[in-house]
Image (cartoon, rainbow, N blue to C red; front, side):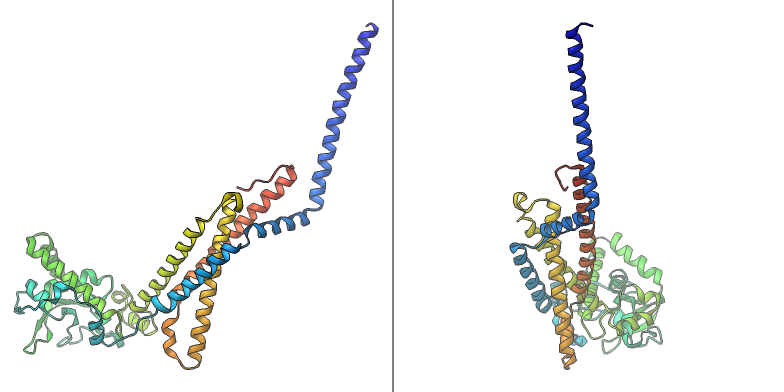
Length: 385
């Protein structure tokens, strides 16, 4: 090789050496950076944790939503979803508006054929057959303080829509043992047990009216269903109310005991109403708050959702806590009427919200910490998704 070729070869080796040295230095610097991250991992994680709290902390607009949510929940507790006052049967019946179809003055003949009362009788009679008790001879025993409300299946809030409708359409009564009886009026127009009926025929005759007896049969079934629903509504907020659904056919005494301890249909409906309205308020607050999201200001959408969930959880906890304090304090000084304001349904929703929201925030925080920490290890810009 001549001198020029040797010089070129040397220059090439120098360039390669520089490249190797540069790459080696990069590896050393990167290793030092990663080692530094590992060495200060605890402090870095604390800093990331603080960053998460800052990103998900409530802003002024969020605090405004919080106050509105608390106000709505408290207004609901004391105006819309109180437990209803329990009335006697007559007063409760007056409180429930009678459907127009049952309000007409009618003359009717109760001397019908078995399983086949007339439409006028169904609509015009002020009674339902499963309220009869004269001459029952033990057919309705076992109901304890609830009496025929748990032993006559027409009073079941769910099964009664079928069984009670069939009883009205056939002027019969079916008890908890699935025994049926023909119900007739006596000389004082009070219903009494006339004799046994065939439970199978009660339902087959009802089916025939609906499917095989033309318009008249359908009118009878429709009228019977309207009357059944109206009767359940009039009994709902009475002192004995209605039993918890379905339990009566399993154990009538158990249904009566549960009702004595407060688990009757009136309380179930009230608690369901409380929970339903509480959920409705939470949903409205969540929807409206989501409209205020601005990516350029609020950053990641998931982090904004944490703020929404905090608003809902905090507002529910504040409203439920204030309700428990008020009711507990009022009852302790002798005001038992305050129990009507106890927000059991709202408390159930609060417990559910807190549990699910905490779970969501923990999962999101874990993802945030992992992605931020790994981004620092990689030396890349953090992008939480």
